[in-house]
Image 1 (cartoon, rainbow, N blue to C red):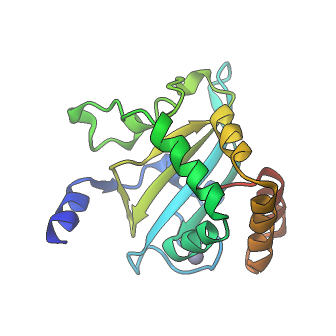
Image 2 (tube, rainbow, N blue to C red):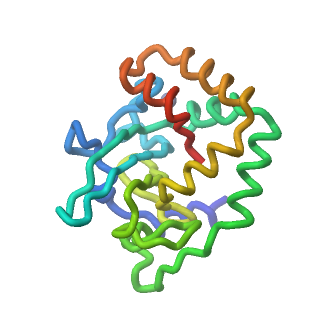
Length: 195
Ligand SMILES: [Zn+2]
């Protein structure tokens, strides 16, 4: 246990601005789903953001963003059917590339986000992509995450879900009361799914 904590400590860094809440212009302070406080309580949570890229203008528009505490993340996973969970795990086990991050960049989250962890496509080449990071309080944890997934990969992952699982995810979203309605609709339509 002590060893694991030490490992996590040396692989932590200040939260990079790319993972800030776009609307708040600062790190997420609460879970988007249950409104639990995340920073002062030093909670364990994830942040997922999706972007649409306009390389010629050198900008990326935000499509959606949210923070999810470890408890809500667990609940979301439990709403998936076992075959869907197995299919998603197998997909990532099979296709995930090792992070091509040189040792000197181990503390630099940006280095993790240069290319899709599945397809290897460079971020500049992607029309749409998502980034997912793992956090503890005001620190980002640098280990298997953060990762960047291309839009094409996210579509493949969606195809692994059975129609029944998609309904279950809809039901899960219906149990969330604090979520802004437009975000809830977006989650239902795009079947947003954190890995
Ligand atoms: Zn939560």
